[in-house]
Amino acid sequence: DLKPGPIAERNFGLFKPDMTMVYDVGLLKSESATPAPISTAPVTPTTPAPISTAPVTPTTPAPISTVPVTPTTPAPVTGTDKSWCVAKPDADPKVLQANIDYACGQGVDCSPIQSGGSCFTPNTVVAHATYAMNSYYQLTGRHSYDCDFAQTGFLTQEDPSYGVCVYQAT
Image (cartoon, rainbow, N blue to C red; front, side, top):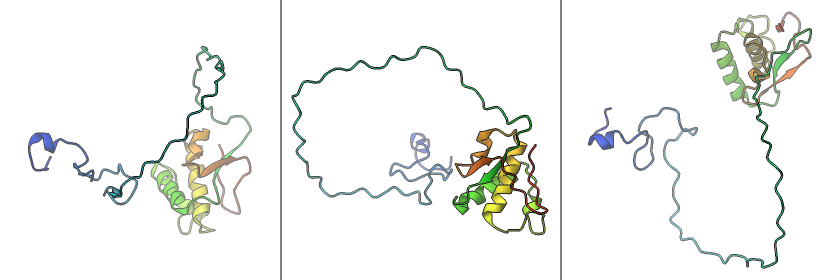
């Protein structure tokens, strides 16, 4: 720890006493690590609404089930049903690009969406994300949660393949 001062101060944590970050480890979503300004304007108290003195009729709550619920892992799509993961056309292009980067970094063969590849055209982030997201979905076992991609993907049973661009569906 290179932070100056007594040991207790050096080990304070990730934030300085003014709540600015000591180390940028990606905890904050904003690009600025500075805290929001605090208003020094006086707050005027308001008079609360009068409390009703009308009698309240008690209600009996619904019984709570004591049957344990066993969580289940969604099973992959099996049999003759084929499904593909496609990008939502109205999704944020930055998120779709992040999906491409993630899928291609997880072992998906993204050469077909690179320049000269069979799925490069149309050269749009939605088309390329659809290819990468579907390849990832197929590679990881075809579970529905492998097509979520921060709610930018959805499953379809319509084959998105076109021309020489073939989307796998195992």
